Image 1: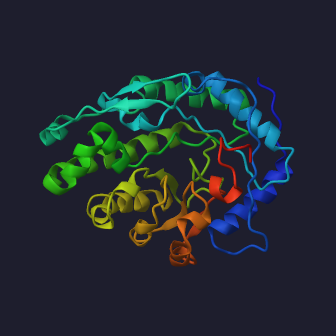
Image 2: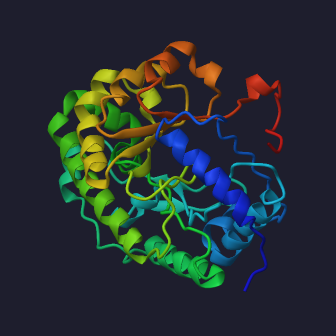
Image 3: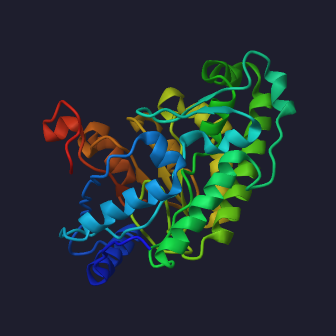
Length: 319
């Protein structure tokens, strides 16, 4: 067993504050989450592909955070790579020591290639076998005391742009809408099936999951939609919104994340049924006051400081 420390009484207080904020019950104090960085010096390749290194790094962060006055409620996340949902289709994933894993698309300038796409059942492809091994290791080493999240839940639109060369995929939204809808239908079915498969083997699941503070079961899941900054609201609503809506209805809600400054997309995102919260990596003022005004009262907002707001212009310091 790996030694680690958690402050269960402090976690309970923070968890209750977070739940109230998600439900927009406006607690007296806004939950503030401060997380200590781990100090073990693993490479990115080790973090992604060695389940013991991954667990030790996360438990080190949890232990160090337990000494802070924070609303952080810890959970473990079996993160292997962003394109893990593209890998079962045969996408080649490249792992590097000092950069995040990347994938090579398998569809280029022939839209009809989408009809050749097939994916195996969960846990059959190499990285999904590794993911199952990682989940089992997490649960065995902690006796299920710390909730475990599903792996990085990249939505169908992101995964489509990883399987289909990104420029060609975006162009196809204008030239080949049938093929785009075909791949979105296939990837939505896969997302639901693979997410459900993880929830069946995780004994103490962490909700909503990746990119969000610990919430509560029965009120939806998190999803990452990481390339919407590059499309218009019209493309989003035709090729992405229907499938996000289906996923949200299936799981009882969505906690929605995208990287970047996506203020032009706020009104379209708010059309997702049972939208629970939104998140971005930029700071609240960089996103702008108008989007915040549009979101206020409709769903929760989870954000953090940005480089510009902290006045730091180098590598992000420990926060």
